[in-house]
Amino acid sequence: HSNEHPVVPFNIDVETGPRLSGKGAVRATRIAALYANVLNGLSTELKLPFGGYGLTAVCNDSAALIQQVLYDETTIYPMTSVGRFLHRTMRYAQNMADQMSRKEGMETEVHDLMSIAGAMKKLPSDLQATPGNAKNAAKRMLATLQPNLPFTLAKESKTVMEEILQEEEEQEVFERIRTEKYETRKSAWQ
Image 1 (cartoon, one colour):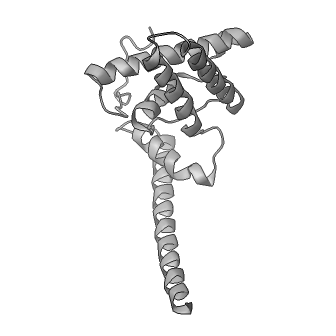
Image 2 (cartoon, rainbow, N blue to C red):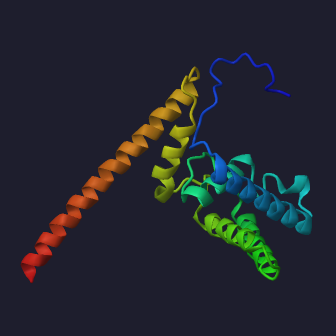
Image 3 (tube, one colour):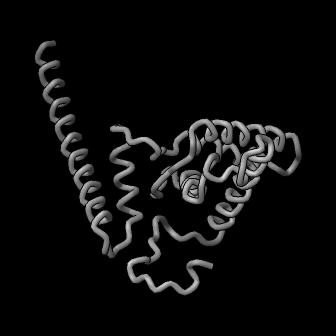
């Protein structure tokens, strides 16, 4: 195992979400198992190489999906699902839920499969930078950075992400002021 005895002081585990226990951990495990069945079923059906890894999703995307189902947001970066396969995976989950709904005692699994399909609609994509995703991507990237940044590129990336967040905050303030001024003028016109 490549990470068995590493001597890399800058490589520290980074917690990107709350720890689960009890019923939350059981539900997260069930969602992971259902999602694995969806990914494996679709990959088999489409005869995708490497079980679809890299096309349908990678490890980050799977963990992010579980977060999205449980908390209606994700803190994980980067998200690399390919849109074409993300759509097919979502439909596969919906079809699996439909098939399971015909069997007694599968209500929880059907609900979680539909939650998986719904969460997939909300997951961000980091394959292409867009202005609408900048704030969310910057927040997620900062949340996943190592606490110690010995490499120049990592330090510069952190600075850029902080600048994006600052710019987004300033833009939100500007938009709020502009809206307030417009509403004030609008009420004066009436």
